[in-house]
Amino acid sequence: MSITLAQAEQAINAAKQKSTELGVKMNIAVVDAGANLTAFARMDDAWLGSVDIAMRKARTARFFDMPTGNLGQASQPGGSLYNIEHSNGGLITFPGGLPIKDGSGKIIGAIGVSGDTVENDHTVAQAGVDALS
Amino acid sequence: MSITLAQAEQAINAAKQKSTELGVKMNIAVVDAGANLTAFARMDDAWLGSVDIAMRKARTARFFDMPTGNLGQASQPGGSLYNIEHSNGGLITFPGGLPIKDGSGKIIGAIGVSGDTVENDHTVAQAGVDALS
Amino acid sequence: MSITLAQAEQAINAAKQKSTELGVKMNIAVVDAGANLTAFARMDDAWLGSVDIAMRKARTARFFDMPTGNLGQASQPGGSLYNIEHSNGGLITFPGGLPIKDGSGKIIGAIGVSGDTVENDHTVAQAGVDALS
Amino acid sequence: MSITLAQAEQAINAAKQKSTELGVKMNIAVVDAGANLTAFARMDDAWLGSVDIAMRKARTARFFDMPTGNLGQASQPGGSLYNIEHSNGGLITFPGGLPIKDGSGKIIGAIGVSGDTVENDHTVAQAGVDALS
View 1 (cartoon, rainbow over the protein chains, first blue to last red):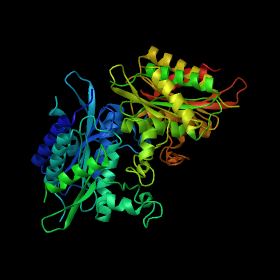
View 2 (view 1 turned 120 degrees about the vertical axis):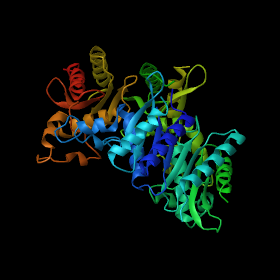
View 3 (view 1 turned 90 degrees about the horizontal axis):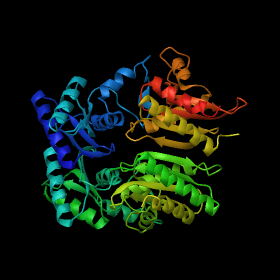
View 4 (view 1 turned 180 degrees about the vertical axis):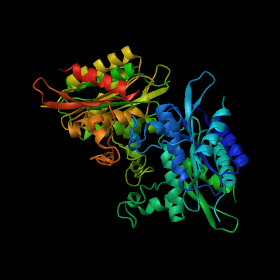
């Protein structure tokens, strides 16, 4: 099973609402189980460079079925996955990408958020995930 | 002036509704005045290869401020813009991409649609444009 | 549902057997429903340049849920999809790529074959498809 | 002399068996003496992002005729090969890639494994190498 467009839009809407609460402007991308883009939204005046980063965070989270920030801890100098970012046409390994699961715990896609601090990116991504659980 | 996310979502919703009327499954992308992605939706079971094509059609339409199909007529062998598709990281020059104008006729973005015949792609893109005029 | 590795290997084995019957040396790639590589085999002394082409044929067939050769007919000069090859990081639109369906007719992946004439590439790909039907 | 497809499949089968013993799901790639892909398998539900990494590990191991992890020790900040990952379209320099030798000690190809901890990736790659020695 893969995420539907209706579910992806539900996640994006929750992420937009959380962004508004926080007073931040985000790029939000959702990919399906095959890591292919399903839906995307850039809030007005959000960073242009975050279009690409939001998509890469979503893909990265699905590529390895974990939060992007977890991967980033292992990709530091001396870490076990140092420079993994050179694979897959370019990964993003700081926080803001999260897998999306269905009710049974199976991963059906992922969300990537970029536009503010990585803490806020992560918080907004989590709001998107929570909307579907 | 550039298209807002609210306007882009309005265009996408109109395009989705037209797709449903036609019984087709589309990828729909909207870019702003700077040719940067603003919003995107892939209808359930729409072609995966059309994710990229919908985005390229939208960018191409804004890059040259004309319907993508017009550019494609000039890019044929012997045409004045032969193989322009090699520029800008890859253009798509068959129908399905259209500039979006505001009430005063100024271009504020573009829409790209891919997922069926180029005639249906164009019809669905036009529905998106019409929703904002 | 997506193709399993066991199914992909079954398709590759059938394709290798058909290649041996024809006296040709092929590269054979199988992707899953998300267009991600599942299995690959290059027969001894098969063209090195066909590693990439076999993978692109498989992806192209899944990207548009049709035989790659069908797409190639529409991408000729003057055709409705002229120069579609510039999308998705490079498509291959001559024969040799075919969708793979399960018993119910749902597409679960695709196979791409490259290494000889496009007629033989197509015949070998078809043998891979037939092994799963 | 270069690895044959039969040998590559033998290495992949040994790697799959070791993966099953360890309870892990791996992507396994084998390249020949020319660093060109010979065979590949992604076990069901293995990480999608490891398709690319397994291939890069195999290529990297053959590019420099050493285990990828050895290269990674020299590519750290301050190291003699700092950021070598930027070459060759992107290298992977953490463990999981190993050269494959024939009975006389001559390198005939390489194997790359990705899908779990780098320790498990290395262990599974070693099982592939051992199957041919």
